[in-house]
Image (cartoon, rainbow, N blue to C red; front, side, top):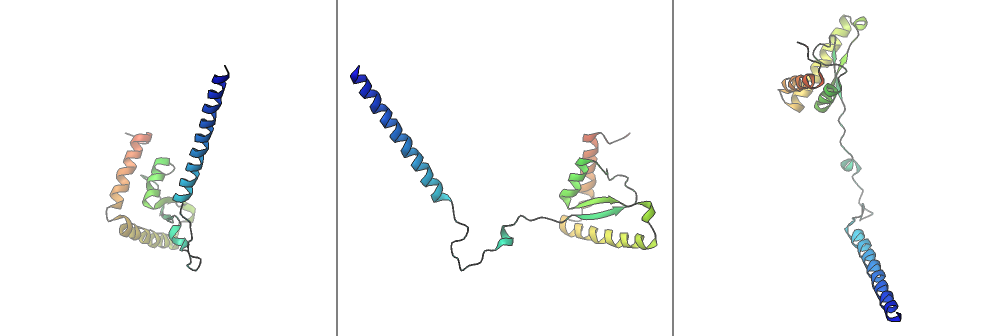
Length: 141
């Protein structure tokens, strides 16, 4: 009985020793693999480089929202991925000045979309909007 107790104490001691060694091994390997943010204090860190790039949304103002699926979450995500959103313009705010402002604003936004997304951006958006219509049940007829 006394011999079994010594063997049990020995096994327990080896188990604790292994546990402590494994814990120490894990801590040193994590610390070695973690790089520091700034090694040389004289060099300034380029903080803009490490920021996530956020693209500011552009807005295309529409008087009639036919075909834009205004309010559909799927269509909203499609247009946001392309970098713009459709915005409905109230009929009460439409006059000659606002018409020309909207015309030039939308022309500028569409020009930027051609340069960023390619000349076929409108076809791509319409194709994806039709897929949204089919998946959400907005298609009639």
